[in-house]
Length: 96
Ligand SMILES: [Zn+2]
Image (tube, rainbow, N blue to C red; front, side, top):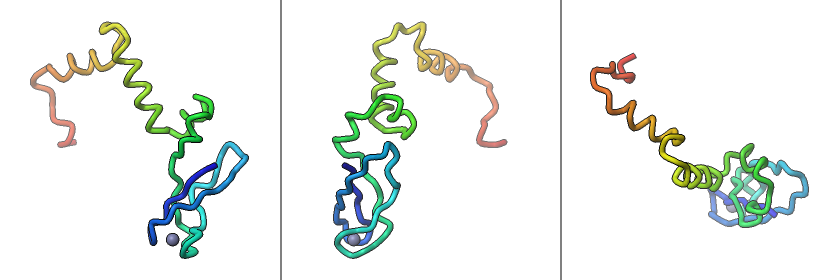
């Protein structure tokens, strides 16, 4: 089951969808607006990790962050990013 939030009247419309890829938008039950946007419901948590990756679920990003925090510092990409950011004299990328 997926939930869609209507931008017009803020009503949440629930939609049962058996396929793995539900539509991004649905028709609002309240005002008929067709642009109700899909929300991540609690049911989405039961989908496979692969599906979460495909949908770029924000919860997956949090899982990745936690995995980084649990990993040794030498294998943590953020560790290298911090070291790279400490270098001086690099051109400002916003100029180019
Ligand atoms: Zn509506």
